[in-house]
Image (cartoon, rainbow, N blue to C red; front, top):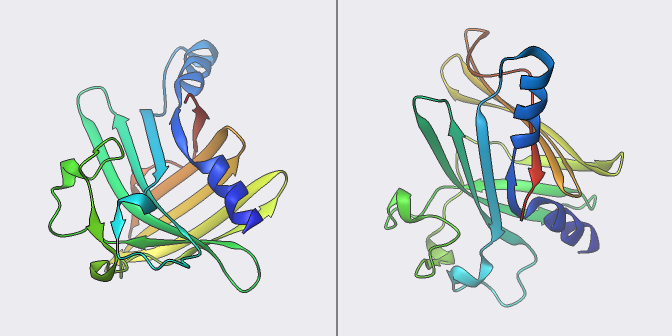
Amino acid sequence: MEKLNKFISYSKGTFNNDNQIKEEKAATGEVRTPEAKHIAEVCNDKIQNLPKDFNGYFMIDETYYNHGDKVTELHHLFLYTLNENNQVVLTSYDLPKEIEYKDFVNNNDKLTFDYNKLEKNSKFNPIVFKEEDGGFIAESEAEFAPEVIFTAKQKNLDGKMYVTEIFRKNGEIVSGSEEPIVYDRVK
């Protein structure tokens, strides 16, 4: 569990890419990446009927992208565990159906849900993080719809995350960028 605890300590908190935005403006005068805020916290204490000997951490993962004219909100429920090779595995779960999307956030003190009703997200392949270069690195691909491929790359360091998420349709990028969003922990 030591490796999993280290990973969680790198991954939880509030992050933003303000430094990346400043660097882009200073270097070229323009900004290529959206302003982004990422909030991730362990939520095992919000889950009813979680087995007492449960060896994993559920996290509510919130990301907010400001595209200037609109803000995109993404809320996810992820489970982090260790596999038989002592590597961290991220498994995505569907948000509980009885909870409004807008209410599935870390700062909702009234949020509770039942472990026995949780369902794995069938469109999302589990991601395995390898520990290397002082952090945790992962890459995954999943087919979300016919000819629509989602690619995720992530590197978590202590206080910093590099995240690339791309949707491709027929090989063409329709959402996201090859350039990662560089998050720094701010809280």
